[in-house]
Image 1: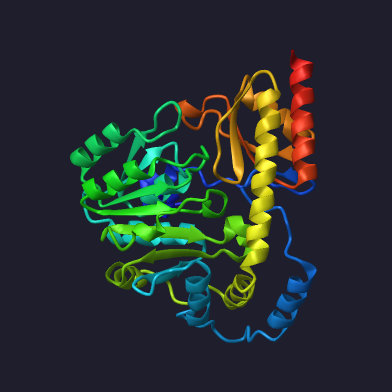
Image 2: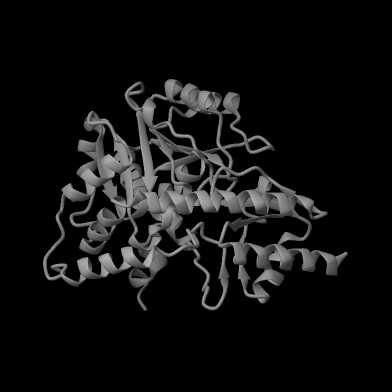
Length: 361
């Protein structure tokens, strides 16, 4: 093969150095690794969706503006008429749109560490420099360090998840507002886990001209549809819309999401059940010797345990799949993350973990 045809001669070195985002196979497993809602939609609603999609004109392109879906989202999420909405194929696409839009030479994308891994990965994709500011040991925002980093780097954009992934905690809202005020660029607050947190900065959009808010329907029970949205002032959304690929939200996503958004009570009831199960899991895990459980306002729980990687593998052998974070960041040493599943799934996980630890004592 001639040198000019080799990937390492053509593809950017920082891409060659990356590892692809790994999604492990989960067939036959109790799947508690991806922050999904474990509950299906009610059968009556599924029947309505089946009839709706049976008549969908899949031979035609979807509505490029998704006007009807946006109207449903605006009502369901109580989005002010002063704000516009941009839709993405999941939040990932929105993060990428923003990163590409601000990637001037020398521009910096900033987040905290540890944070959602795609903030850092997408910075690499978009060829924009990345700066990560470590959280404190208790995973709270280090406001002093953040303000110093803002002063030093003058970031074009800061991404902050509220609650944070993978730690599960809500950052201090006052600290976030201080960061927004100090930042010369935009601040994107990712509220992917909003339904489990009883907290939001959506009411602050009118107060801060550089604030944008991201949401997703994935954690609420529609992960398979891949729908994310960005809410912000029209002057920002208008520019970012130029980066959105045409027809990025398919017709099935538009039809099903709009239908389900007219039944948000179903999703919110499921979210309440998940929160109740989260409390039970937190309590149970807290009684197991050798397990340090961190507070969570999301639909998952982070915990620290001796020989985490071995425990992760042992759970996997017993057909229980969670997320191993050991080795991904110094603050996450010996940490594992488990999604809150159904009552039966959570019981099986907790009992299996307890048994494994009893065997290793």
